[in-house]
Amino acid sequence: MDDVTPGGAAGELHLRHHNYLVLILGLPLILVIILGNVLVCVSVLTHHSLKTATNYFIVSLAVADLLLAVMVLPLYVYSEVSVSDDVYS
Image 1 (cartoon, one colour):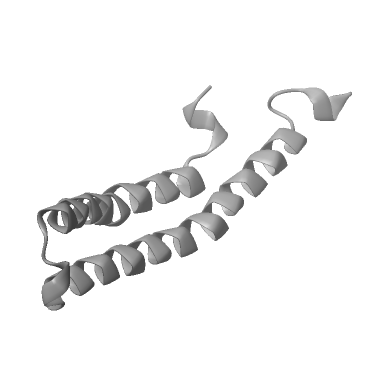
Image 2: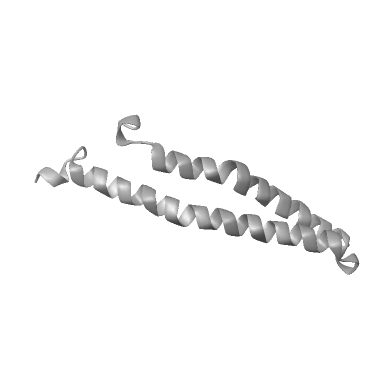
């Protein structure tokens, strides 16, 4: 019954696996988001046929998503990996 307690080693092990799962899935996701949004911006800005009002709206969405991937998501991954159980108790 010791592994059922909230402060037990089993709870810490489960939290640790959850944190590394965020790290393993989060970093490649950030890289894919950055690469995809940069490709959208470059393609619209370099090809003359893609310079329409609708595509400029898509570029603005890509820039917003790019800022999210550069500023917010790394902080989320860092906080999930570095925060221990003591912070929330």
